[in-house]
Length: 375
Ligand code: TRP
Image (cartoon, rainbow, N blue to C red; front, side, top):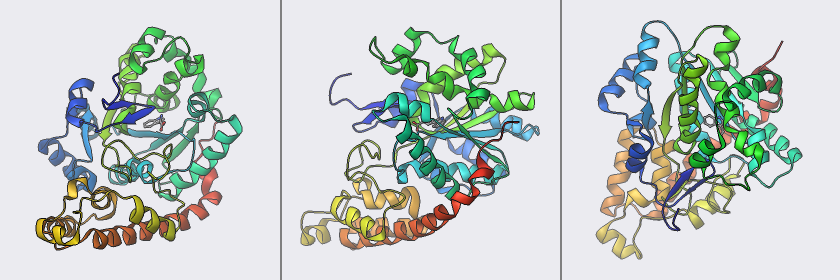
C-alpha cells in the first residue's frame, strides 16, 4: 500500500479512516434506523454507542435477531490481544459487549490471544504471560456476569482449542492469508497459522454443548479480516457463520485519525493512569478543535468533530444526549473554551477510572470464576 493511504488491518491502523469506504470494501452493511428499532424492541433502550453510530455496521445481525426471536439465543464472542497495558480504546468494545450481555442475557466467550501477541510482537513469552494476567484484571473490572462469562487463554486452553483450530487451518491456504493480511515469505509460520485460533471461539460453544448456537462478535473493524475467512470456512465444517458488529476506533489523543494505541507514546490514556496523569495527557496532548487565540475562538467558535476531548465524551463519557448536545452547541458558538471542555473531560475520565481501578484491584480474587474450566 502506498505511504500516506489509510490502512486498516488487524495489526496496523493508520491515517484518516474512511468508514464508508471500509463498508464497501469489506462488504458489510450499515446499521440503519430499521435495525436500530428492531434491537430496541428487545433492549428497551439503545446504548449511546448505537445511537451515535460508534457501533455502526454489521454482518447478519438480522439473522441473529430472527433466531433470538424464535427462542434460539446467541452467544457473544470477543477478545483481547495481551501485549501491553490496556487503554480506553480497548474498553470501548467491551463496555458495549457487557451491555449486550446484560440486555440479551447471553453467554460471553472471551479470548485472550497470548499466542498471537507472542508471534506478532517482539516480546518474550514470559512478558506476554504477564500482560495476559494484567489485561484479564481490566476485563473482569468491567463487571461481566461471571456465571455467563468464559475466558479462553489460547496457550492454556490449547487442549480444547487446538483440535478445532487444525480443522479450520486445513481449509486456509498460505495464499489466502497472504492476500488477506499482506503476509510474505518471511512471515513466521505461527503467524500464518494464527487466524485458525481466532476462529475457534466462534463455534467452540457449539461443540461443547453439542448443538448449533448462533454467535455474535462485537469488534473493532480492524479485526474483520479474520472473520471474513472464518465465515467462509465454518459452514464447510457444519457450523453457523458468526454474525459481526463493527465499531469505529476511539481516536488517539493526538487527533481524530487512526486509533488509540500504546505503540506510540502519548496517544493513549491507560486504565491504570492516575488522575494527575490523565490531566497532564489531556491538557498537553488532546488535540483541540479550538481556535488559535481566545478572541478568535469566542468570535468563530470551535470544531467538536476534530476535538479529541469532545470525542471522548461522545464515545464514552457523556451518555446523556442532551448534555452532550449542550456542550457541542456551546463549543461551536465559542461560548465554551478548549480549557473548559478539557476540564469536563478530565473530570469524567477520572471519575470512571477511579471506579475501574477499585474494581480492578478486587478482580484478582475473582479471576478463577471467569477462566473456563475444562473437565
Ligand atoms: N486479535 C484481537 C487483538 O489483537 C483479539 C481478539 C481475539 C478478538 N478474538 C477476537 C477481538 C474476537 C475481537 C473479536 O486485539
